[in-house]
Length: 278
Ligand code: NAP
Image (cartoon, rainbow, N blue to C red; front, top):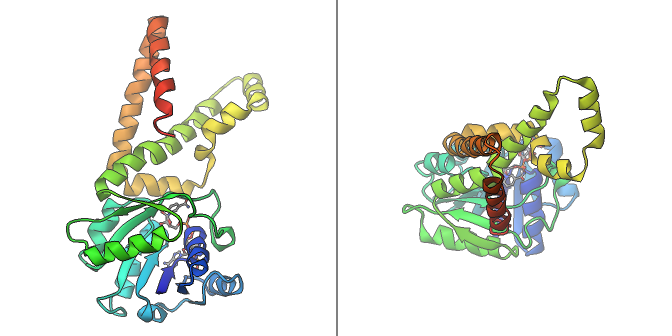
């Protein structure tokens, strides 16, 4: 098929490499000319340009820009495309995108590849990024079945397991397992930084090892991503943080009361539950 990708960064670039390996003809569009040159040189796409009109021939277009650029991108595409062109996006938040894009382009289905790295930009693109991962599609009652079938077939061919759910359900689930951990992890680092005794702080920084590395990894990442999560998934993130605060309050009460049996039970429950998430 002739496929388009807009936003040749980590996800868009990796998608280009993967789609090319499945013998699709890939047309790329990105914001910067130098990114397009790099995309051609690295064989990420067959053609690359900053000009959206080059995508007029694409049968399916994957919008892989940052979240805030997805809606403006659809608005720019509207006058260029035929109504048969299927649009999909890869944004990490779904409800606000699906709600705003669907009225502009009915032949649209929201998507979210459950993959990534801490890197950004086209230099970070890698061919195997999608292989063996889950890819969420968020159809609504208005989504044309042909759009869903076509996008499903394309992403399944990249060795992904396709799952479907509503945009709101998706946002609530990722708030719990993806967005909440970022904020928990960053506030853990912030709490440690509050230590007023310089000797204690220095020793803590020297002693911090694998446990601290594991629990703070996602909180030490790109700040822009965290802002996007809170901004575009505000309600679900707030609900998740509220639930987390309640858990912290319970924990503090149990320790204050020296209720060690209760504490052991709580920790035993979380020990058993962890495997159901991983
Ligand atoms: P990224 O590496 O920064 O890539 C995005 C690329 O889009 C940039 O390199 C930029 O390329 C281009 N771009 C920016 N504004 C544009 C515009 N207005 N028009 C055309 N191209 C534009 O980001 P990413 O991590 O790939 O994320 C892209 C999308 O994937 C986001 O919506 C994110 O929510 C989603 N996502 C990310 C991950 C992850 O782990 N990173 C996982 C799943 C989904 P130029 O060099 O041309 O400026």
